Image (cartoon, rainbow, N blue to C red; front, side, top):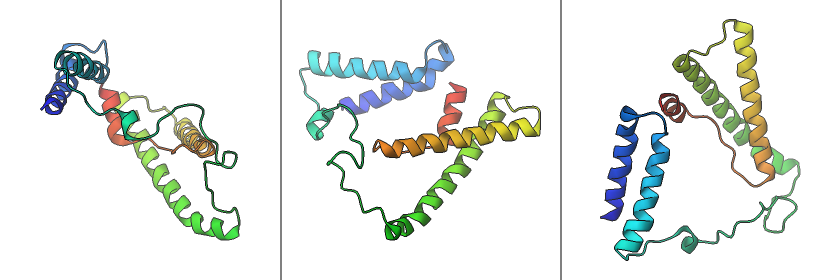
Length: 161
């Protein structure tokens, strides 16, 4: 019952707060309200316990464990056979991510009216954004992180918030 109430309050905050003010992002206010409900109302006032993330697994924190350096990672051998196995899936994910990034760039330019006036400048900015995304994803792999890309849905929400 508490979870349903928190979902409803969060939804209402995100949906209707921007109609009142855009001074503070509605999602930030929703997170703060949900945290207040959890720690003050549910835990202190009602005296109920909820499951914490730390109880679900080992989240000790600390510096990232670098693949190839830390014994935590069990990496496959770096040879031609491994390369041929991962080449096609890696290229497929890279191409799909690039197409998604290009579509997102187009949508954001249209929503914010920030499209460059010349074709050359537009191409340059788009190439720089794609290269920056690829470089970030490349570096993520060295720290055991999962790379990501831009999504049209989240970018649209951010443009309207």
